[in-house]
Length: 50
Image (cartoon, rainbow, N blue to C red; front, side):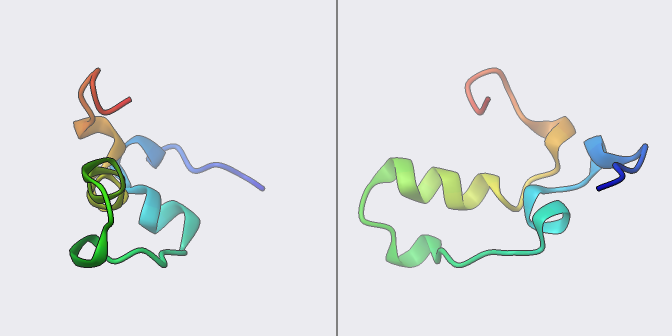
């Protein structure tokens, strides 16, 4: 798999092209937050997100 140079500006959802979790149906706050992070571009992650 070849990685593009602009991968930092894409979300995990865009890079993996898969997503099965629905944040509204999350059972815990951790699951909810992980489902949100999938949609955020990697360059916008904070230390806590990592």
